[in-house]
Structures are given as structure tokens and as C-alpha cells.
Length: 131
Image 1 (cartoon, one colour):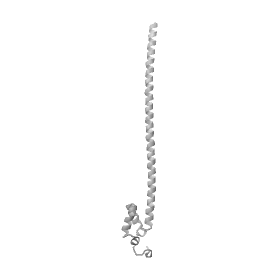
Image 2 (cartoon, helix red, strand yellow):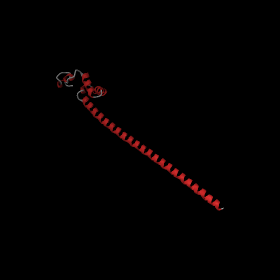
Image 3 (cartoon, helix red, strand yellow):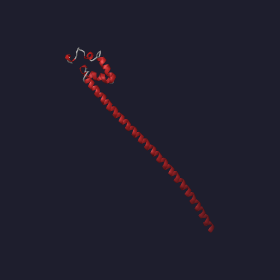
Image 4 (spheres, one colour):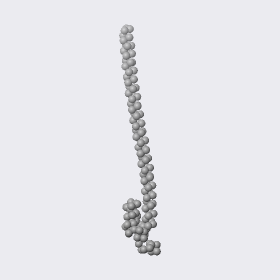
């Protein structure tokens, strides 16, 4: 830190803050506190007004991009789930239709068999009468 850069020897009071803690507390109003304090500890006080702010802005942009990516993934998942539900409903409808068709075919086959028995019985009776 260069003394000639500030009007006093305290960059925090020169920038309207009571102390470094006051400055970091204000940053915590805009950014997650754990991120502010982790980066502040990592960079040191000499980067509080430059590197720290830049990294917090970069962090916010990355978080926003990640949130957008997460939203996109959630929308994609919801669309896939809806498509699966629709396919399941379609499959269930197809199964119901097939079961109905099979039951109808069974009923028709039963009626045809009954008619065939009647014809057979009549044919037997006619043969017996002819003997």
C-alpha cells in the first residue's frame, strides 16, 4: 500500500468505512459472507479494494452462470419427466386398447365356437335321422 494513495494512513476510513471489519461486513451484504471472508483471508488486506472486489464480481458472474445452467438442467429434466409420463400414459392406453381388443376377439371366438357346436349338433342329428 502506498501512503501517497490515501489522504490518511487508513484506506478503510479514506473510503468511508470505520474499519476493515466494517468494510467486509458491507461486502457481505452483496456477497455470501463465507466467500467474502475466505477470499479476504486468502488475498490479504492489500487487495481489499482491488483484487477482492474483482474476485467477488467474478464469483457472482460464475454463480449466475451456474444458476442458469442449473435452471436449464432442471427444465430439461422436467421436460424429460413429462415426456416419460406421456409415454407411460400412451403405453397404458395402448395396453388397455390391446386388452379390450383381445377380450372382444375372445368373445367373438366364443360366439363362433358356440355357433359351430350348434351346426355340429344339427349335422349329427341330421345324420342320425338319415340312418
